[in-house]
Length: 436
Image (cartoon, rainbow, N blue to C red; front, side, top):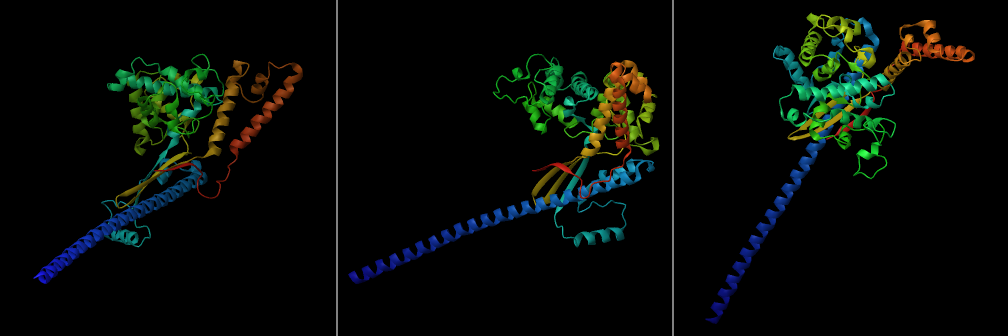
């Protein structure tokens, strides 16, 4: 009897042990499976991220190629092109992969394109956009050596903020109705100018009492747009209003054929806001419609067009004149988003034509020298009369040397302006690239 009981107990223990073992194995297998699945999913996600980044990089290279083609076309054709907007299409048209086919395309063409896409090594998607930086206000021009450019940039920024308050009916207009925007713009200028004296009075550092750093403000141009948050008096709301209209990579003036509505409005700060809005509407209508004339060829044509709506005698006056450009765009912002499954990676880059921007700044400086000469009468003189006028305040023994020096400088600049420098080899120069 005891034998049977003992055998039964041993059998029951063996069954319990077997059940426990099976349960443990199942639990262990489940845990291992879950870890394996998690590792697989993590690996798959990382692979998707890499694939998305490579798609974005492929997109960037293709867009650099587009800009290079545009630069070569404008360099080779120049004034021979009756409508510059024809060349602008090289960089303006939307680029995505796989390409979006228009509804009007034939079945044969559609089939051919789809076959080509299917045979491509690029198996992932990207979307891209290129925008012109020349159509924005360069915030670093507040520290320009050209006085006219500094003054006009300040007025443009001030006008945009004040107009937002005067014309707006949103919370921003109500909250900033009594805000001193001029003091804020002065603080931005103090951030980039070379001296230590604030335009608002006193030392620049006195406006940053909580920052114990002798290099604040740094007295150099902004390196990133986000740096503006550090300027005394800057708020997130004002920053959000300004950033769509400003850049750090401008062309030392405004490209009228690329500027957005708000930037164009800043050119008419001395006019009634409603009149200014109507003028800009007409400019955009003309600029975007080839049948109405399309983009403006030069300043003479632009001012002539404005003459149909306003008295242009007070437009962009000489005292605070901002340089206006109508030729080929120089600087671009490229935005590329690569897509792989549900993962995306974004690359943003800026292409900067430093040589052309430098030439434009030289032109503005020479104009300042002429307009701010010792004798105001020099402004309307040319040739030898101009040089003699600019050196009229020199002693007799120094006047001849002064005239010769100014002649040589003018000849050198004229020769520099006439020379057609070849495009540098390789892709366009990028000065900033961010991966998000």
